[in-house]
Length: 252
Image 1 (cartoon, rainbow, N blue to C red):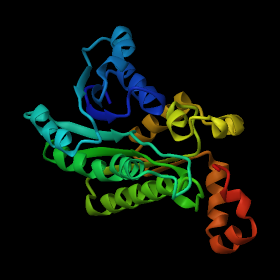
Image 2 (image 1 turned 120 degrees about the horizontal axis):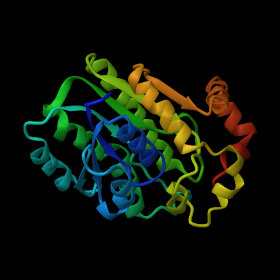
Image 3 (image 1 turned 90 degrees about the vertical axis):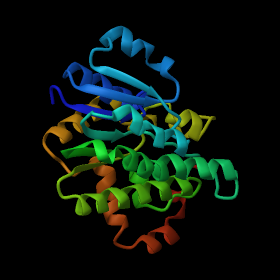
Image 4 (image 1 turned 45 degrees about the horizontal axis):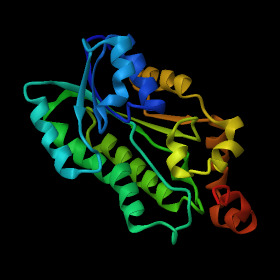
């Protein structure tokens, strides 16, 4: 990966930041798209800017994303790692219009717009890495819009893999990770505290993601036991939802 150039979103915290550190250690050139560049001051202090570029851009803004193409003139991009995402743990009716739009805009719509903006600059065999969620595979009361947006994200990545056979597309479906994501999803942190024991470690997961990029994996599902349970659930989802309803209300 030495000398390659990747674009990274969500690089200021959690899994995205852990991936950024690994790439910089490998002397990969990384352009981080971030709304608040000051959040990367510690990364600059530790790794310098020889392999790190920062572009200020609000990924909720379609106009700002489309302007990014001006930053990549005469550059070759070896891939995109889309680690941005958000959601709210509340009922469907409790979501405000802004919260609904925010969720779908960041998790799926503006990923596609970003792909459109950078596509002319992608190398012949780029890697597209999407950080999804196991939530895409099951019905989730009190997190319906988050799950729906991640299901749509998976569908787009899977279709992209078929439409662009020269692309390496890696979908990363995760269970809960110990990251600041939960502070916005559920400010009470009740869910994070309740499921603290099964939270994934972002540093270990980042190692898997980078290894998956190197070995051209198409999918990472962690934790594996959760993915296996969801495979069983898919055999009779409506029956299980009807008779074990409480299992689907863990974010209430």
